[in-house]
Image (tube, rainbow, N blue to C red; front, side, top):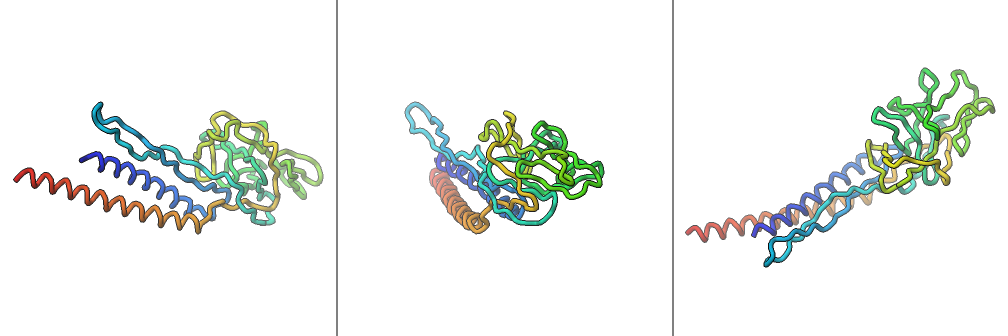
Length: 238
């Protein structure tokens, strides 16, 4: 009798994980460079004995990220950068080097190009990108080359993970690449623009309603199953 409850609870747990992912997507629908996240349901089968049928349960152990290109929004900012194609900016964080599509950068007091959190933006070799103080007109080419008054002064790194399937989200818009990275061959920088979140808010709200209804149905089943077991125990105890 308990098997039905175990199976129902694993399904409810998975739906709760999906609801959390959907809610996070909606909350970041306007976050620059954010990538929508989903969950992958799998079947977990457990033996219940040699003479008994196996027990099938739902399992959610994998979160998947949608890396589809987001829309580009023109800002006109000198250091507002977006990426067209497959690639990432390379950033040094307190937890190590990370990849991101959020390109809202600015020079700090030392001339280093940094993120909104103050983390250095790196070139393809892993060195901080430096913009000389008092530089005149700054232009950033499609390959990331920074020019001040027509003279090259640095290059922003555009990289791709060696194994895209190993990318793990370490922050809202930051990703870790355990296997390392290489220069991105099919990516270009767009100056004066930012890449919007690739979250489809309407689709996410629709999915939230679907998950909520599925959770309510599952909870109703568990309540009825609990009541059935209680009724059986009461009947046997008489």
